[in-house]
Length: 286
Image (cartoon, rainbow, N blue to C red; front, side, top):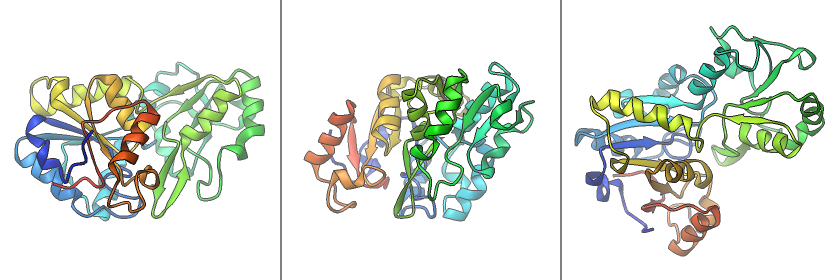
């Protein structure tokens, strides 16, 4: 693992990027300086960019939000979210048609045109979480008693976002993955969609092939992300090289200054997670 000044040092080795969004392109409020330019330059040399996000909502909602943050649509080829994969799953009715949804109202479009109704806890055939009801103030422990009841009934919990925490401005907030982790610890069955779990990478490969008009070999795809246990592990498990962005959720562990990671500390973060990366940089810049 080497600290790199920019993506340009690796760009010629790859034909496609599977690029994380939150913590790499933006902090939940605004785009990081230089990221849109880096993606645009990679595409200008003939590369393809698929934004691969653990956002628990369908990808069609995201371009407008990205534009407001300063990420134009012409710097990427497409978007794939864990919400897309989750929606396909629940629309199959494999787990039933009555769901108890744990998460904010903004994620309700996930259920549109699926034939699945959101019901009260007592009526549910399965549970789906997109995060805490109020992620500004809530965490997993707020759900312990509820989860004990649900797990005792044998209800499957579908997790639409495996992330444990994510940046929002200068804060870290809990995601659905943190709730799912507690549910599993209490003996409940959990099904995950999104990174680092394998199915989303199969979908991503097909999307990249559609963009390129030809299958892109795994050794020509680079996964870019700030999550050691999601983005980097997912790439490793899929046989795809990974680039670690240190200035996201792991910034405090990588050095005193988020913009100046320390190589030994970065190496320790990756080793602790049991993952490897071809390089690391504080921000995705060219």
